[in-house]
Length: 272
Ligand SMILES: [Ca+2]
Ligand SMILES: [Ca+2]
Image 1 (cartoon, rainbow, N blue to C red):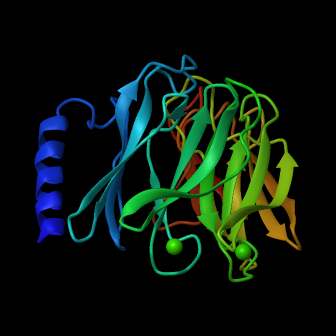
Image 2 (image 1 turned 180 degrees about the vertical axis):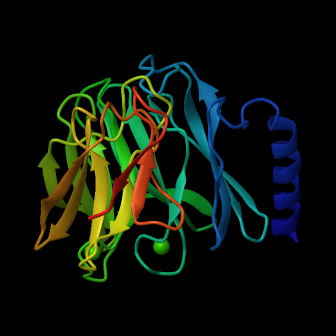
């Protein structure tokens, strides 16, 4: 009964706060899930970290989750951190049937880290994170989650410093910790100042292997990268005919990817 009363008062409080602190970021994206978490979004817009990598200087100070049963949870960051992201991705990384929440957590002093949250002990808890990059104003952009090497474990892919070092990395959740699996320079999934974060796609190659399709560091080609024996290997690259500026997506009912460049609004490339 006490639990119910607390939940109700939390809901009422949330209702009052919804118009102010707990609102979605101005450029935020609501994530929806079909598992134990129905929705996740970033809250508490703040200008306390002047970086502006995603087009505006408004980042998030909180993370809100709505469970499938309708319960709301919010995690509020200490003021030396922000979520430097537009959405809180939902994916069951460790295969326990419950979704994790994956988001870019930036320290104002030490830059970005990839962070994994979950609902633990009836609250949102940080389950694991990669090390922070080590310097302020250094960022990473998450890419895809998939079992790229068919070993039964999900790999998390992301590009560390997509405007500087341009290093694709893969990580796995092992015993509740994030472990680096592979890294390879020469790729980028974000154009500086752009709100577009989704410049990658997981594709099935004609030989059956999964590959990550990702722009090369000058954004003028799409590379197809596989993960084998703990290493990234590029199996093909296709010219884009310009600089890719949009999301990269599957073209419906085809074996093609589609995107826009600075020269053409619709470009397609065949998946090898
Ligand atoms: Ca899980
Ligand atoms: Ca795997």
